Length: 171
Ligand code: HEM
Ligand code: HEM
Image (tube, rainbow, N blue to C red; front, side, top):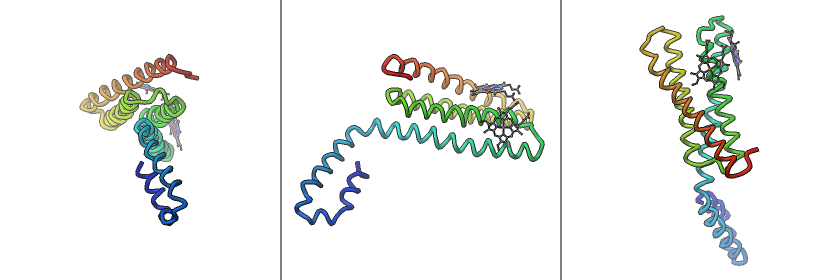
């Protein structure tokens, strides 16, 4: 709302022009009304922000790791590279595409779903990297807990997709 209002009020010269006042009042009313239907849109924007920003940031990291592995010919972290790419980049991006094209699937359950996978793969791959680099069993719990979070996130995604198909077109 404040963005819209500040946009309107930033056209300050118009306010001095009496003939423009009805138009400005109308715009302000529309901005206010718009703000009343905004919470859902704001939540969706945040959700898509997480999906697209985190996935593209992960892509930079995973591709950098790929380049490092290629140049150094040390493929120890290949499984980390694979899952960073396919879970953190591709899957997270696809979740965002799904939620963008299916607004009726959005909501707090979608935020939980994306958070489960996001936190999950970061924890899982931190554990896996630790395991591969040090062979210390101390990293095992991270890998296990992280993979269970990822698993739960994918399961919830399936449930949300099925629910979306019941409440509207899911094509
Ligand atoms: C500059 C970009 C990239 C470089 C330099 C790179 C490099 C590598 C290297 C060195 C390996 C290890 C191969 C092995 O140990 O056998 C690998 C494996 C793999 N990479 Fe990448 N990668 C890049 C981008 C990507 C992207 C964008 C994806 C997916 C979206 C991807 C998916 C995979 C997969 C699935 C494997 C496993 C393949 C297998 O085990 O046969 N990579 N990559
Ligand atoms: C809970 C989540 C997951 C766990 C615990 C998991 C675990 C594993 C394990 C244990 C391997 C064998 C690694 C090896 O032989 O070195 C593997 C390979 C692989 N996974 Fe996953 N995975 C998960 C999710 C996914 C997802 C969501 C994707 C794709 C979207 C994926 C794509 C792959 C691919 C392409 C390989 C073969 C890589 C290669 O050959 O080097 N994984 N995964």
